[in-house]
Image (cartoon, rainbow, N blue to C red; front, side):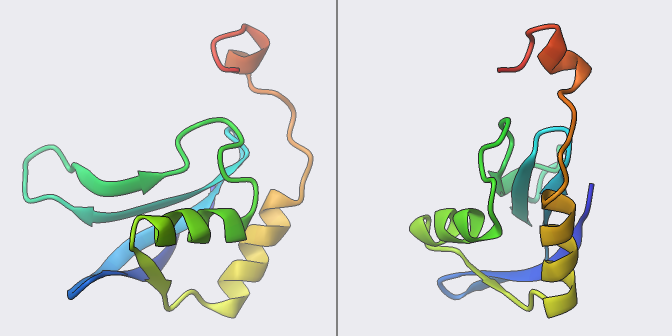
Length: 102
């Protein structure tokens, strides 16, 4: 699983420690940001939690924009690395083989 730190904006608010990446077992890109001030590490935004939910980097960026979030400071080399990771053929996970994930 890859994880890259980015800046996430929503209105006047900024999260300089947001994370974007690719999750091979789920075969999806993910985006996490704006951690709540609680003891549980709750995130305001967490996209990419379902199997093949966002198969392209463009799809997750657009999903974030629909919720009025903007991803900034995504390094070109990091984008290439994520796209390379997403370009592999991954075998179904044990959970998929057992029918727990569809």
